Amino acid sequence: MRIGSLFSGIGGLELGLEWAGLGSVVWQCEIDPFCRAVLAKHWPDVTRFEDVTAKRDWPHVDLVCGGFPCQDVSGAGKGAGLAGARSGLWYEFARIVGEVRPRFVVVENVTSGKRRWLPTVRRDLHVLGYRSRAIALSAADVGAPHLRRRVFVVADAYPGGLEAGREGGAGDGRPSPGFRDPDEARRQGAGAEAYERREGPSDGRWWASEPDVGRVAHGLSGGLDGRRRRARLRSLGNAVVPQCAEVVGRIIASEYL
Image (cartoon, rainbow, N blue to C red; front, side):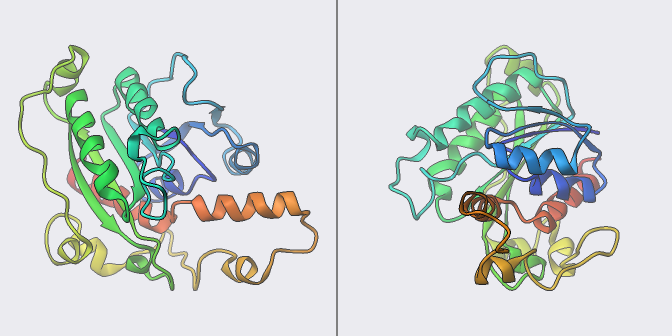
């Protein structure tokens, strides 16, 4: 499977999907120069784009993933929602999905502001020809000593849905499954076993804490200047926990493939 990533950050989401064995990343899109340098180090052979708003011929992939900016939908923000300039970039995400027409879409964003973004995102995906489900996951669910609660929307193209989406319709009108809170997700439904196992990367690697959390908590290496220190802190703060993304990837592999 070929994977394309939007709002890639430092690549935590696509890394987890690769760990799950879904395939390989073929392109990424990230506007931040520091993050692009990190991506170039770890995915040197992947095509990278800078701006999601640019009009281009996006290479076809089987899965498009991304976590669009959370500032306007987060409970910590001012509540502009998807009308905000930053979180409103979701509509560029949706436009690109409509152009690429992948089989799968994975969208990630904050739990605290889910009512400001989740219904609209799922509705837009439905109009584009995708059924979706929302999965609540936190870093603690995969064994980390911190929370970082997130919602992952997994969308798959239903039969005839992509054709309906191309024509601007809303598919066959079937309702999408409702949002499941973390406790319900652990108790029942697809993927419950993955939550309970709290699985790490498929090659057996695991971690005692978030990568570099000690250095983040106590100050980065003195060899970093202030600008790079701030860029690194920002990129870590925005990153998707790859172990969570891997759980999502395993759900896709076990239930859709």
